[in-house]
Image 1 (tube, rainbow, N blue to C red):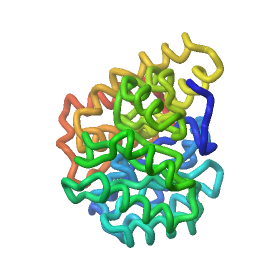
Image 2 (cartoon, rainbow, N blue to C red; image 1 turned 90 degrees about the vertical axis):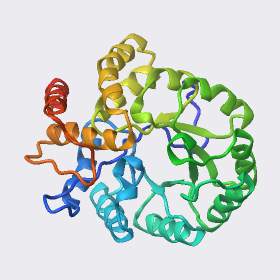
Image 3 (cartoon, rainbow, N blue to C red; image 1 turned 135 degrees about the vertical axis):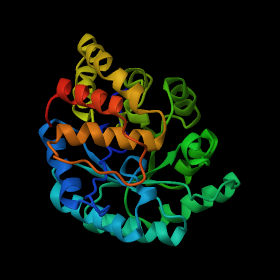
Image 4 (cartoon, rainbow, N blue to C red; image 1 turned 180 degrees about the horizontal axis):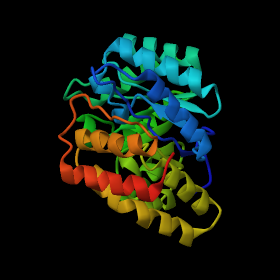
Length: 299
């Protein structure tokens, strides 16, 4: 861990899950209530509207409802990060300003879901949003999941041209960190997603934080604090405890959000857990998540 944060943001920012009622509508109180668990169990921030929140399965109205209710429940108890996933410059600016209005502290811009796009056009897209938004921000650079992304040189150019661009979220392993940090001259804070897989090594390689899944965030927060305080053996023991679950859940985005919600719902004490366009939850899958939820305990 470098211990350095250019933006002032660091640590564990769990991505909140979308919860649903039996009729498929959003369960807004259940979504917002996750913020209480973040505070109870030592998270360093709160993230919402990323792939883990199933943003691609939500209407524009539902996205706004989620950020409004989460911000109200969070009530500035933790720094608040909102992912902006609209497919146009105007749409991203509008949603970013809405997030700022309800209390977002920083933003993560997703590239538009338009397939192939020249890097110069993507830089122009992000740059126009950055110029119109008065908040610290970064981009989600995850071509393996989103099908589009920037080179390290492109990230460095964006950072050089826009003072509020100081963060990047990647979905990659530890070997990606050294060249990224070197080619951007250490000017970017790197957060890593991937549900927290390889958490120890990406933090040791220079990431300033993680944006993991919600289902095991308390263990990740403890791991981060142990590593930061020099308690490496404790951090390693925590990671070895959660790694099998991370490997189990991280088969695909749909598999991850379905089983992450199954584990988290049990830990939060929900009587019924419903999904929207998820994968099938098998009998074996249920037995696995029940065992994990019992082992980690209530949130």
